[in-house]
Image (cartoon, rainbow, N blue to C red; front, side, top):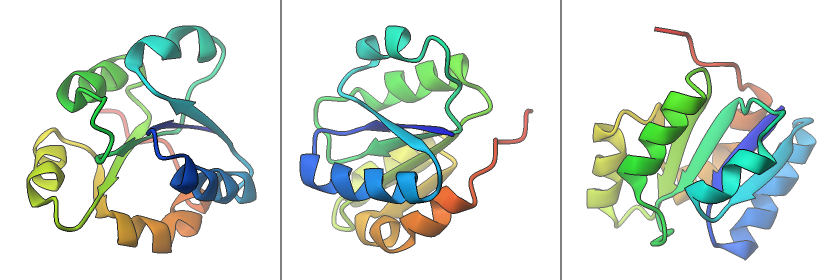
Length: 121
């Protein structure tokens, strides 16, 4: 099971990596959309996670590109509870699950343990 994470938060990234490992998966961290093709050549991620605090990401373009390339991968976004605008943007973009960082931190072990591919439309 491969999980892709778009973030630049090294501290929280390590907590996420531990939760993914505990669920039997592998975390692949991306800093940009361009860095993914060669690293995902032989993998199909089950989930793509977006850190909404990551200012270096073009969320609309990246979510669309990931949905096109990996249509069965679930998309999840998390961000600060005070950043209501960014959380709403993620919802409008059609991200499957949008959580505050606190919710994600609390539930990530369960989320990664119960991950299944998104139903095809």
